[in-house]
Each structure stands twice: as C-alpha cells, then as structure tokens.
Length: 335
Image 1: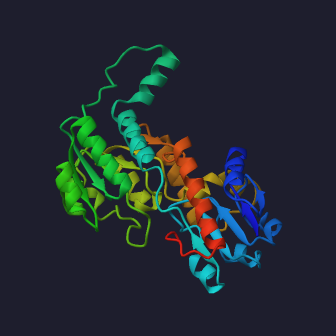
Image 2: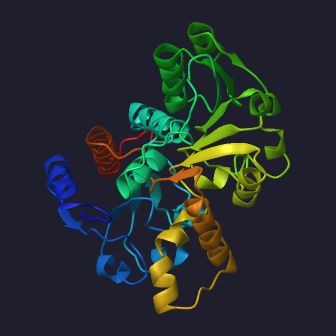
Image 3: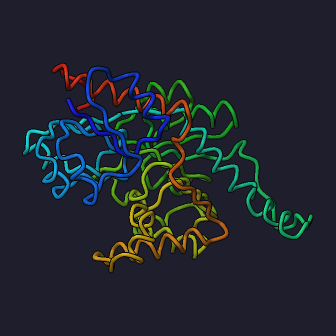
C-alpha cells in the first residue's frame, strides 16, 4: 500500500520506517492542504496531525484513499462523516503524554503565579532587582479545580495532592468516585468549582458538549483573582468571555497552551500576504488571540504541552499500530 505521512519530521520518518515494513512510504514535513493534496492522489492511507484539515475538498483529491490515521487525540480536523460516506475509516490516538501534559500544567501554574517571565524580562532588560511587583502565593493549601478527570486530569490531581499539598475539587460528566476517594477529593457541579477554585485547570476533550463550556454566562461566577489554565482545546473557552474576565479582574491571570481559533492564527501570515480572509471569524480570532498574547497577566505557548520525546514516540507507535490494524483487517479499538 502507498502510505503518505504529513507534518512528519526527519526524526519521525526514521521511526515510522522502522515500524511499518513492506509498504511504500512517502513523507512530508508540510501539513496536508489543497496545494499539495494532488501529490498524494494515489494514497491508500494518509497520516496527519492536527494542522491538516481533511475536509471534503481534500478527500475529493484523494480518490484511492481507504484510511486516515490522525496522530492526535482530537479528530475535529477530519470530516469523519464525509469519510464514512466514502467508506474511508479514521483512526486516532486516544491517549498519549498524560504525564507530559500534567507536568506542563504545573509549569504554566508556577510561571504565572511566581511571575517568572516578568521577573526574567525585568532583570534582563534593566538589571532591576526591585521585587515589589513580583509577589506570588504558595500552592500549598490552595484549591485546584480540575475540569475533566481522564488520564491527564488524574495525573494533575496526583501532582496537586502529593506534590503541592493542594486541595482538589473536580467536575466531570463521568465521575470516577473510586479515584476521588483514593486521592481525597470530591466532585462538585461546575458553578461550585468556578466559585471555589483558586486555580482552574481544563482537561476535557473538545466535543459539541464542551464547546464554550466556560462562557459569558458562567465565567462571572469565577472566584475573584483565580487563574485559568488551559492545556486542552481553545474552543472549550469562549475567548470574548475570557478577555472580559481578565479585563474586569475576575480572573487574575491565564496560562494557555491552546487558543480558540489557533489554526487561523498559525496561518496569519498566509492569510494577510496571499489572500483576503474568506471568513470573518478567522479575522476576529486572530485579533482576540493577539490581545491575549499581549496581556501582561497571560502566558501563551504554541500548543507544546504534549511535546516531549516520550510523548512523540508514543504517538508514532500508536499511529503505526492503527495503520497495521487497518492493513491486516483487525478490529482496532482506535477507529
């Protein structure tokens, strides 16, 4: 079979080549788009990451396609319904980097709370040792509200309880009461979590049910001065409400590894240099994201919470196993 990998580094290519044998492999470090889709017109299988939007227009250009392997937990960048109509199966990586993302969550919390970046820039730019504006607070005894207690959320709870002696509360549509008992925390409703938490951390998948889970209607209930940490998906938080909460001082700050509309932000140079934006929501997202990035009490990172050697290896291994399962007609769990 002819298998095309997009958004793959040279290092990734070597790993994939050692895991998939006896098939024709093609690699590109570019995302799959309408400009390069024709180069993969004979593909039986494609493997992509989150920046490749596999929509009807792309699928029309891949007439031989039988399977799509996305190397991500989320698959909203793939038109699954359209693929199903064409008899194309889709596989994903249901979990990876659960320790990696949990650790990064606390990197954001500590950097935000202890004002690491303002302190660094102050000293580097002016050799100023005045610490009057650089105060933070201890995490011990503070309340961490975890929204979503899957693998990552559970690891965040463990670090909070065992590492920092924090109080933990959680909200989840699918409660794990056994784990809550083991770790010594309780599940509460969303409004209670927002009003009681000193720090709120998001770890739910992005679905129709979690779109704008935090929004204009409920973000006013957040405990004044609390921090919001998002390493999940940007669309879980309504950006306009987030900006308003920061402006009004409801939120004391935010640590964001993801942004609503981050895909158009990544493509900003292309949008403004090569074509007129065809979607006013893209322009709005770009403007709002720039406002967030420029706020002094906000830390934004470019979707790197998952990005460790261990997590990348785990992702590639699972994606290649998914492809093997499809080729050999196995009923894989990740379809």
